[in-house]
Length: 341
Image 1 (cartoon, one colour):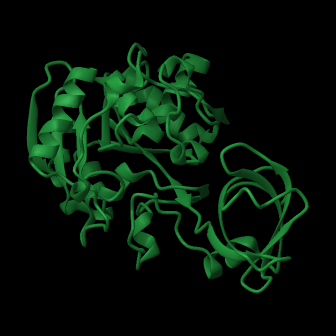
Image 2 (cartoon, one colour):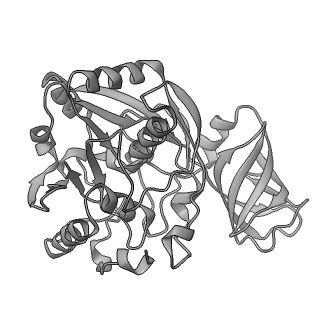
């Protein structure tokens, strides 16, 4: 299958640069995954598609303010570092800009030395393994010095850090937000629960793969980057009970979907587990865990467009995306949402 099959034209002015003032006032496009029927709605209408006995699954990862701006210790040249995955101890996988001039043994300094990072290994495409040293507690230093790692297509700086976090964000460790969840408010989640819908949480820390485009023509040759996931026994029990009693599992976001499908594929059930997943979902994939999906509109030729195409059909997805373009929906991280069910 060729990457060009997942392309579509998106006018640049439809890329949302800032979040709406109220999270749940975004638009919602409904797509019937079987028939291709679509409907234009408001996000609060999501309640219409959730029934008593269903379970809504949210990714509770919390984004680190992990974009740091500093200098090379030896030349004082400016450098930008995006922290992605913690390895062992204080070793981190990062993206550097510019990366070519950062060699093994060189040290970067941030906040006049409050955080220092020494390169211990070079990776491809601007990646490095850096060993950090810092004063006090790392999370406190990041809160002080770091910025939210907004995607490159967002040109404006974010005034409120919390607007790139879901209201239920808890587990620190992500390099990007699970953006489908940004539309939910605490009051909307309470209303959903009052309908008899259960809320369950999984964790997937969004990592390097989010920032890297597909670089092969044949998507069968694409290799996903591994990301850490976790499901606790409480969530596993809720999901098993949902299935046993005929309820549906509605996943919020592609990250929750990848976590659920990874676990069900590995254990043939919903089981408390942790690990690393590089699952790549594209047309032909057999979904076993998820019955419905709430998601944002994704970049052309991205693995996320491939995932939603697998959940419905490529034809229906591209038709829905064209409708969203025609109706001037807002796209990508701070954009509008769709529900596929």
